[in-house]
Image (tube, rainbow, N blue to C red):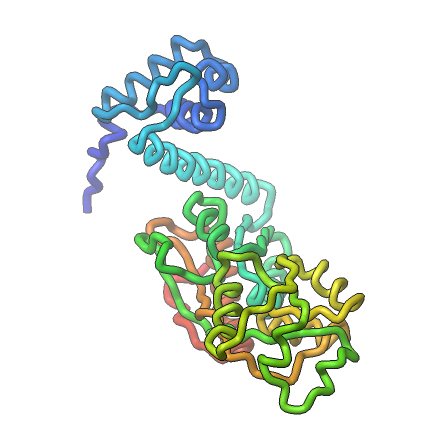
Length: 324
């Protein structure tokens, strides 16, 4: 089967320096500074930009009195330039790792719950089979992780897909819904209350996620649906180290994913309040890009995640396409 090599960038003789220039101009906001960063003259940079704009038939930057600002066309081209450059950088890193006798590297992002339950056994399996494979892990919100996946900074994500996310070129495999629990310090007075209800919790001080997050919205809604006002004595953070320390030193409560709550309860740092909160987070899943080929190292981790999912969540995921 013959391959069609008539892509626009081949006909246009697109240069890597043009991609670098686009990214530098967005970061510097000025073609002179962008040229300096790339160690080229300003006329040379201007010619590279003009050639690219002429070839695309659109204006990529608005020329302003003080600098330059990307147009919508420019923002699109810059986004793809970042992805292309990131992919080339990863290719070099992989080749250097293989030359050095290492198996390669893989970057994964996860939200907190599966970061504590699914990732440890999966990474342990990978390191057992391939000690020299380098695993980079980031724990963040789904929004941050999806942005980094789109930029090519992550190979895969264990997180949530929301309506606002661009789902084109994504592969999503659902894992489980995520219940949440209320936690407090061991010995907290509310732990002894019989038949604890939401009404008992309204006047308590709470550590909650920031306004605008999904969990915060559902936390507030949980009280409102019971005809109660949402708690007003609140501290906003998702920093678990601060949260657990603050709970130990006060009578504050916190709302977290049940898997996270159980982990800290098993270590005696917190206790779960005896109430089933009528509040649930959306299901999370395993997310990869369908428009990019996974590296051998990424396939190893993906296979380990799918194997671990069976033991952790009882979910059987297809292993097709992850042969390393």
